[in-house]
Image 1 (cartoon, helix red, strand yellow):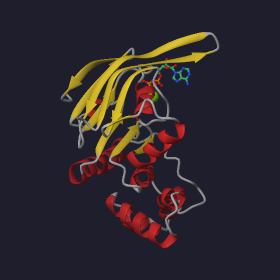
Image 2 (cartoon, rainbow, N blue to C red):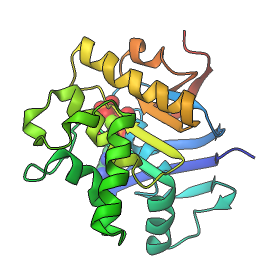
Image 3 (tube, rainbow, N blue to C red):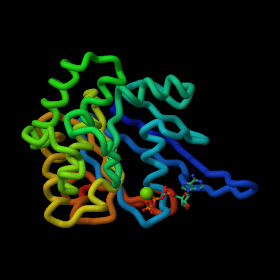
Length: 228
Ligand SMILES: Nc1ncnc2c1ncn2[C@@H]1O[C@H](COP(=O)(O)OP(=O)(O)OP(=O)(O)O)[C@@H](O)[C@H]1O
Ligand SMILES: [Mg+2]
């Protein structure tokens, strides 16, 4: 069984009296160690699907097995627990805390989880090393380039050792050279640590780094295969 198994997943948003159907019967299997790019026009449902995958929102219908467990029937606090253990998130905006240095930003999820300061800083330093920023832990976020800030955000997302990284347009704010730097880190985490990765992107150049490309159109999967 895959690490992620979606079957017949549908989702609508309701605002006032208006119901907007967004996802229609999505079937998707993702194996451990997969590196998948998710593409599709604006409004096709990419972020909606990522939010469902990350247990930030719930589907109206269908089943979702994550690491062998049906998660659609779990309540919100159970979702949070599974999410914290299983999923790391990265977004287009880096969302680093301005008043904390880089090391403290990366260590923060561990402190929230109750780990002691010294141990958390050691672990955070290890993650900074993995994203190639071992020497910059003392800097403040605004003293880093965009690509470096996104690598810090990746380190923070992975500090709890989740098996899955979900990245929604992680290079959307970056120029070409910096995009390559961030993609290099993502690729290395997939190759060397078997991290399962799903990346939303509008750029085929970004998708070509992945092992697999899934295209959404109007809330349906219209392509699933090698990125070409
Ligand atoms: N919270 C919400 N309430 C109502 N409608 C929403 C909500 N979030 C998204 N939508 C609608 O759902 C559809 C899919 O949105 P979604 O954000 O998943 O698209 P996307 O593929 O990520 O687009 P983009 O490439 O622009 O980020 C759109 O029509 C959007 O307007
Ligand atoms: Mg989106």
